[in-house]
Length: 422
Image 1 (cartoon, one colour):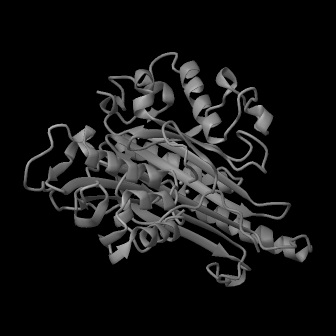
Image 2 (cartoon, rainbow, N blue to C red):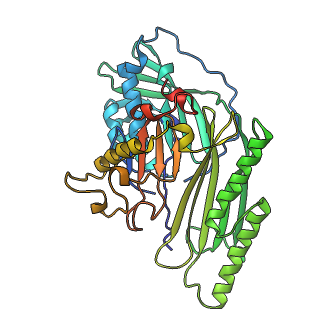
Image 3 (cartoon, one colour):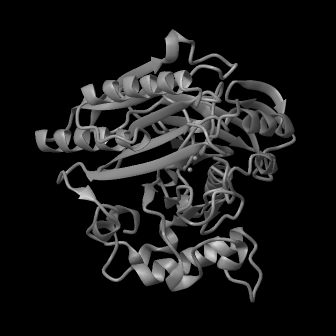
């Protein structure tokens, strides 16, 4: 059976290595500065706290690191990973590369192919290089790199060697660096199958409902911990058609799903395998904790279903955040104009044509619809659309990414994202 999924994204054997920079169905992903695109599924623990301390490379620091050629190449590397331009990454490397993470004595073509093979298995990916911490000594640069994807966060110190033409000849991971976390979580899993079948079977013939999620076990306040856990259960309701309030309700919903399938089999109305798979993780960056939910499934009919939902909390105040808490008053008209330009460029909409002319239910400027769900990434905000939110089912849900530097005039200087524009 064909499984319909909204979001496939990126990783595998290069796990932490491709975790270096800032950036998850394969749908077009619009970027305010980069138009190469497409993004998002995986589960990993985000509960461990690395204890190693950050170290700086010896040597002289470039006086204007953020504007240096090395910084530009590193940021371009991140941008290409975030926008799925995998094969374009080879242009940043020399023809012959002595090392790329675990690959030794390889070529730029080979490493680009490995990235292309490796990355499209993760969701909600964001690569971000801390270029303000970049240290350059001769032809060698060291910089902390951050990676986020669904259920996983890491920060590593990378060492990058360049040739005279600023092409990368070596890319190594030196050590893991600590993550500043105020939120601790524990993984939870609920799986119920029909007649105890193997839901992991590649045959795809096992009806099941699964939940892979986390529970917040520690937060700066009991109030925040309770708020986040309540939101987590609420989001898990999306894929069930039921209103869940407790963890016990999650198990009950899975049992109900299997029972419904069994009844459908008896009545001969189940002509294919049903399944629902839900994943939920918590990501924390610079005082903002984000709850990220995704689900996919099939319950009969012409096609499957999928859903994405997010929620954000200020770890200092405990408040659940909306765009109104992050942006200046009356930000929306200007943000819609910027998003319109990004969207038109990505979709190559010619002058004289409108967005709706291309089949979408929204249109340009004031009629542009920003997705209800968004992610606050290392250097951008990403709007993620569910099916039917921007157009009919046959159109892949778009993702619109706006760089903070392009909307800095819309971000509250004293708000949760103020540090991004100061």
